[in-house]
Image 1 (cartoon, rainbow, N blue to C red):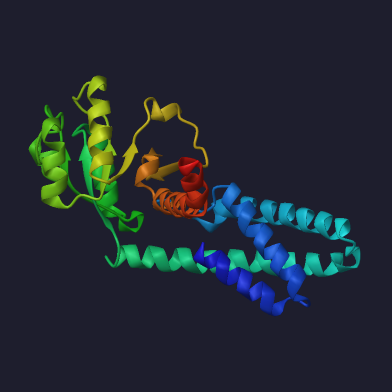
Image 2: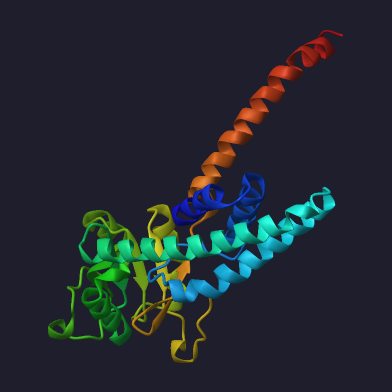
Length: 270
């Protein structure tokens, strides 16, 4: 989002009129958010973003033009179009720069997440090898977790750290920030306990979908060198917005109680 905020600032500075520029920038950022352009991704690409960036810029222009006509400012339509063109070009340029810096930071080990691969099978080994070879994904595999590993020790790119029952202890002991669930010896019934443990310990989760060879890549799907990964969203109570909402709820409830306290006291006395 920082890249788009800078693009919005550039638009407001370069556009002929400030009000249409601010309206276009605001509408574009809202449209980008609705298009899921702000979700975290392992391999962000400006080429993947380009169709949605331009398409939602057109949507933003339409909304602002309609609003201008409604409020009787139809003569500002040309300024809206100019602001939209500046916003689109700035957003593409700033995102391309941001993605390049992010890839450089990941390759230079300035940023990265210690990663545990659950499932020491062929797919798990392929994922770990790909993440080690391509560090710009930002995931740093430190080991496998599997009760009955399929891949022999000499063929494992990272060591086996324990079995499935030790998931919580391994996460804490090795400072794991991300868990990738691949195919392993664990039964499907154990997935609930794995997901609950990851949620309780506040770690990110990805899983490899079944029959991924036939899996169609969607906007919400990441890929690690051809293997699709689906991010499992955290529980609502673990997100920053939940804490903000909770704080607002407490504040509003507190103010309401203070305002209604005299009335309630009067009713109790009567």
